[in-house]
Each structure stands twice: as C-alpha cells, then as structure tokens.
Length: 299
Image (cartoon, rainbow, N blue to C red):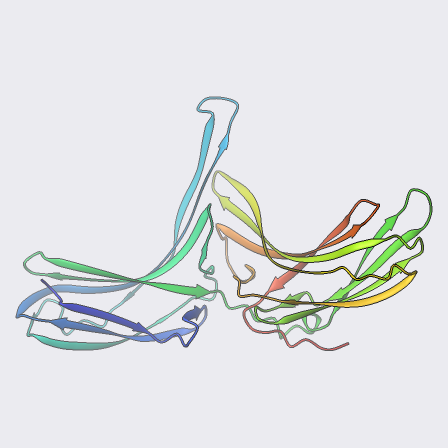
C-alpha cells in the first residue's frame, strides 16, 4: 500500500499565494502502516503553460488548431535520501522542504484559451512495484514592484478632444496614476472644458485586461472587463471639475518580468464619454497592475 497518508503543507500566509523570487518553505508528512522496502520517493515542483484555440480557414482542413504546451518550471527536491532504497518501519516521518521560485515565472492563470498552472507532485514507489502519487496545486503570482521608479508614483494627465459639426469643442483632461496594485483605491480627476455645453450623459471608466496568446504557429488576442466606475451627475457648464474612484479587485498582475510567455497580460483604463445627442468618444490608457502597492504621491 506504500504510504497510508501523505500530507504536504506549504507556508504561504493567509492569502495562499506564492510570489516569484521567494524561497518557499513547507513540510511533508508520510505515514507508513507496515514494514516495506521503498524503491524511491520523489518530489517535484512543476509549472505548465499551455494554450489552444482554433480558426476557420478557406481551404482544407477548414479548421486550423493552434496549440502549444511548455514546462515553465520543473524543480526536484531531494529530502528523502534516508528512506530511498531502504526498508522502513511503520510510523510517521516528517521532512522539511524548501525551493526557489524564479523571478521570471508567469502568474497562475486560467481562461477559455489558456492556462498557467503550478503544483507539487510527490510519488512513492515500493520494491513490490506498488506506487502512489499525490498532487497539490499552487497559486503563483509574478512579483511586480515598481516603487523604485518615481514616475510611477505621480499622477499623469491625459486629454480627450471632440469637435462638433456645428461649432464648439470639448476637451477633457483626465488625471490618474498609471501603476497600482489590487485592493488599492484609484482616484480620477476629470477637468472638462465644454464650450458648446454639450450634454454629457455619463463618463465610464473600465479596467480592461488585455490578453495576447502566442504559440509557434500563430497568435490570438482577447480582452476581459475587470471592473468599472461611472458618473452621471454633470452640470454641462463651460467649465466643470469632478472626481471619481475605482476600487481595484484582486487580479493577475501585468506580465512585466516574464520571459517569452505564451500568455501576455496587460491592462488599460478605458475612458468613455457618452453624450445625449452626440457620438461617444473613448480613450484607452495603458496601465500596469503590480503585486506590491504603489506609494502614490498626492499632487
């Protein structure tokens, strides 16, 4: 029966998330119920990145499959030398483990097209050819800390313009930070110059996750709305100023430190200005999601 019980505990704090660049510690507990000779016990930390999608083609076979799978991590941990190839007695055996997560690993991720998954795999094989395997999934996030760059701490100004067919123009100055972390509250300053007094129905700011999938044979793009905030109470005077806020939820960080990923993750703030009698204008502002909260400077 090899082991009766196998328990793996990883020290990951309350969040259960591991971060790249860290040394991860934990323990393995093996309980054996009878005397037996163990051929080997092997423990590996494995990371797999894979993507698969299809496209219709005008010629045979009319459907092309794009698919690729890469092993981004495979670490073997040797802590079982005292029982490998030896006879063991019934009892409980405890082992301390530690391993390093390279800084360029992609974050754990799942979509309809691709996944990045990590897990610990422990396999025990006895001389009688019996074997057992246990797999424990891990959540890994690529550590992104941009506090060493002062330009990421100050708010940036972006402008949006609209010229009306009859006369008059509208200019919106949109001020916000371009780097922030999940669970940070993101402020927006909106300064409106509205010569025509055009009626603004709504301003919507949406955090959009942009996904770029790349395999050897091709690529695909997709996007996902993470959260949004909006404002509707505008005076529609020639000059107007207002503020908005967005509470950023937990989400996967931008692919800043990742080398040659199958899945590249980036973000934009999509600002939409919706008028009552005119066409909507919008602007995509590139932003970076970090894992370490950014120390924003108030200006």
